[in-house]
Image (cartoon, rainbow over all chains, first blue to last red; front, side):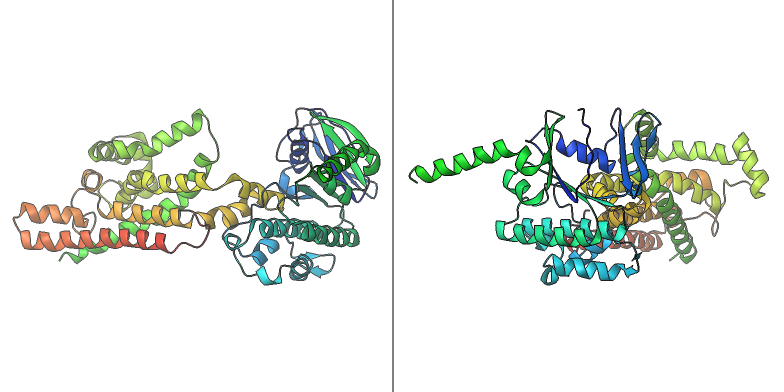
Length: 235
Length: 223
């Protein structure tokens, strides 16, 4: 793999087909894998925080990075309730707000009050994924300014109506709290809905970066043609 | 009923279990969280008491803790007396002899924990220490209980190592299993039967604890 890009927008989507390497990029930023060569740096108000720099032999451990992650698959802790899962990543105090208040806000925003005392084994796949997003977002908000939220295929398994609501809630909360997001997906429709900025990746290389309408114009056309063809052909 | 031997056996079993849990937790986590020649060697050494005759282990411990070896002489200088034929010596022997019974269930439990949970915890900012205590250990409570119970019952039933290392000194090194042996040698079968029944009851109660606990695990908890 050989990729280089910068994130400048509140929400950036890493788009590419399965096996293109987008999850590997996300895992490298999270610190779960170490690149053979390269730098990963986060900047906040002109200050640089080096997370990985192979030339200088710098590799910050995942839990010490200014990123919070929701990986593929919810991976909710099975011995904790939904509320306890969401509270897991919350720091005791953030910018004058108690962790408990952030947790309660996440539960309300992600429509989880009815599930708050349930264990993950009692939830559907879509509900688990929703809790995983709420947990990672809570951790990012709680970490403080300068933190980045990384989401790997976050809306897989959500029904369309709920997905739309979730995206709006998440976008609204993170915009207020000024926490940028880098999310990974292979879904064209979801990318249009999510991203002001898209990084298109294929075979381990960045093919194009720019506004979604520009980068994914071809994919959009193909998708519309397929849709029209399916409407024309009898069921 | 030999209450002196019963009391000594219980003290030995509780002491061995407490020490071994402290030793086995980090050792098992280290073994379970990687591969390599070093880990294979450590795992083999840990499992050695499972395959060695207890008399072999007892013999080498007797030499190592007594005045015939350099470590034994050093220990005598530090402690003030030989550890062989003392309760402290028995404790050392029991810890080594029961090590695999404490470590193996924990290694199996830790290895069964899905790596996705460990990664998720790190992705939420939890240090490896917090991940271990807040995620890994609660998910392996069943294995922890199995480890503690097996260590306890195995120590209660020890014979060969205890006899080689501690001899048969009432009140100092005579455990229930040795007291039972003594009574059989004296043809006092009624007393031997009472002692044997206590050993059977302790073992059965311990196994009941493990199997009844398995029926009541919290959702998602691993054994």
